[in-house]
Amino acid sequence: MFVRIVKLRFHEENIAPFLENFHEVKEQIRGFEGNLLLELYQDKNDNRTFFTYSYWETESDLEAYRNSELFKGVWSYTKTLFSDKPEAWSVDKVATLQ
Image (cartoon, rainbow, N blue to C red; front, side, top):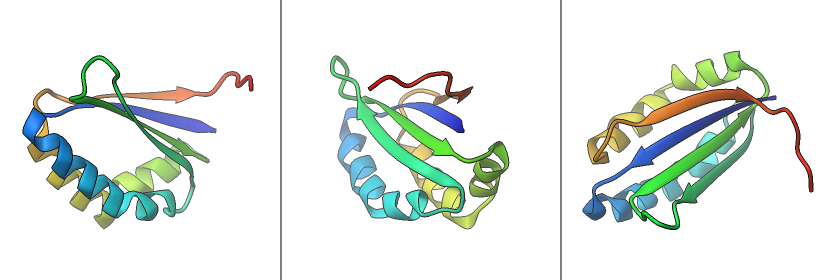
């Protein structure tokens, strides 16, 4: 399993538009081939900062998503809302304890 973590920071006035758009497209992203899980987190101390965690079967599944019309549309809109440059990490899950 492959995990993509993205840190997003928005202008205060762009939080609501971001969340509205996310809720409109989240099922499509989650339904994309190879996507196993999609999560959105909001920082408790800075409400302008969000993190997405997306779990993928393989790196090539993520790349297929990143080259899709769905991603291009989502990303072209979302990046207009940022207050800072986004950061992203690609990681392999090592352990999960529940």
